[in-house]
Every structure is written in structure tokens, then in C-alpha cells.
Image 1 (spheres, rainbow, N blue to C red):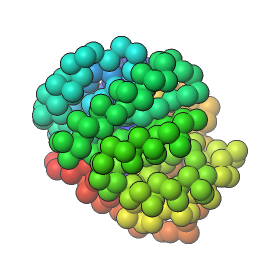
Image 2: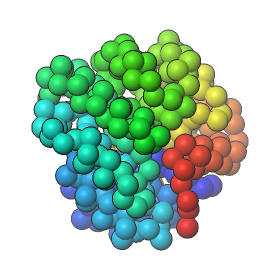
Image 3: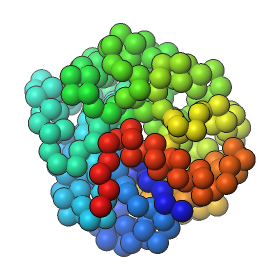
Length: 261
């Protein structure tokens, strides 16, 4: 099987110091490309360095300001974001959105920074990777108001149910599932996963967190484990694993406009 981990925080301290071995294990598990996600503009520079160093192993990256970090977004965010996106191997703006679970940044500031980044992404025709937690309705409201093309939007590590996934699909977006979908407590997410069309489903790890079953005891998740997410979803959707892997890989290549080595 050939798989793409569409959202992996390999610039995170728990993985960064062992990236060589992490990527070797990923390749052994059938992972042919990894998209490095970031939390803020500073971490984007680390992600760029990883993408350059491991270009032959198909490491790409995305740039953006996570809602947790919105409080520290500089006034020059649109300019900086545009400059970062223009760098080599950058394939999207994200993860951006709203997180009302922790409220690490004030909600008005989260909404402001989210809207700003959507405007940048729209002007760049970039893929947009969405983080939303306990803020789904407002996330959708801001997305609709932004005028972005829904087909360029990806809801990462989706944790909604059937109603939410229908709303996302009606908007035209794609849906990515992480190890959460494999949890025994995730029946609502699993039902949602059954509704996503074959051409709009993706897989990810969101590592270093959210290790999937049967690797839940693994404290530091890593891209190799995307194989377990894919295997679970293939079985859930009654699809041959090879077919499911091929489909999600083709979707990732198309949605992120990837040029694989």
C-alpha cells in the first residue's frame, strides 16, 4: 500500500530530534509522502527546513497560525504568510480555524486571525486546512463569509458526527480522519466517515498525538501509524485496503497539488 500522511507535526520537539528514523519507519509502512503541519509562523521555518532536507522522501509542509496561537499573530501576518507560502514545497495554509475548548487565545482574536488567513489563502488559491473544536457553527459561518472555494478546504482530524459532515460536504470540502476514528468511543465519527465520498476522504496521524488503535499505548504517534488509520477506515467502509489507500493517496496528490519524487 502507498499512503500519504496529510497532517503530521514532525517539526514538534517530540519528533524533530528523530526525524531520520521516523521517516524511515514511515517508508517501511508504505508512507510515500508526509505533510508537515505547524502551529505558528516561527515553526513554519523549521518545517521548511525539513521539507528541503527530506525532499527526496517527499516531505512537504503547510504554513499558518493555529487558533491557540492567534493571540500572538503579528500585524504583518498577511505579508509573512504570503511569503512563506511562496517558499518551495509549501502546499497549503493551515492549520487555521477556531478552538473554543481551551480558549488559549481570546475568541474574538481567533475569529479575526482566522478570517485574515482565509483571505490570504483565497488570494493565493491555496489549499486550506481547517482546525475546529467546539466551534463548528462559527467556523462554518466564517468560511461561508470568506468566499473561499469549498473544494480547496480540508477539515483535518475530523471529530464531528453525521450532521456536521453533511454540512462540510455540502460546502464542497474534503474530510481527513486521524487515529481518533479508530477509538471505541468514536461511533459518531465512524458514522460520519461512512458518508464521505471516495474522492473527498484523506488520512492523517496528527502526530505526535492521537496514536490509533492498536497503537494507543504508543505515547508519541508518528507517520507510520497512518497505515492503521487507513486499515480501519477501509474495513469500516467495506473497501479493499489497497483500493482505499490508492484513493486517499490520489486525493491528497490532487488536493495539495503534490509532485512526488
